[in-house]
Image (cartoon, rainbow, N blue to C red):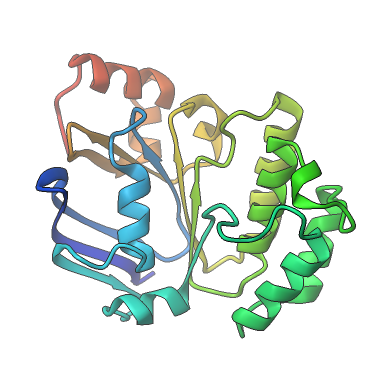
Length: 237
């Protein structure tokens, strides 16, 4: 398959501080990619750059041929929290807003996801637990028909049963030719579904390799990740 995402020489600074340094990678269509790293490593920042939400950087980013930030926003679904929405808003109103904002939003697909995830459409955002809010955000993100999905820490702070249900949702509803990038620092949650592993450490992309290559060494992806962060594995890309 062709590359849906290409990043060349990406460096990103915030307040003169380097957050990401000389990132280079290519991601094929249809892949599930684990973007791994410690808290604060730059995973969310990289996703924001890819999605077009952080436009000021050095280097180039292309998603399905779209290079300008406004163009990338049209072909990337990014699971940022529902920012700016009053907490008194009901879930159904949030969904209608997304349908109005995004021409590629598939309402029937969202309804299927909502049923599978037991989303309460009448609940106000203020009443949702962290796990239930995550489910709403993920369902909204996956209901768009795009080439690239970015899920940022989808399992952070939620219980094991909900994590398993979300993973099942990802496997069941991801289109065959769509690409999914999941950022996480709880590696064991997503290890079994990954095609590619990317690890960010110290502002750098230190690993970018097929997950099966790691599994072939006899190590789990979680063990490999721990080795990289402990400095025991420095084979890089």
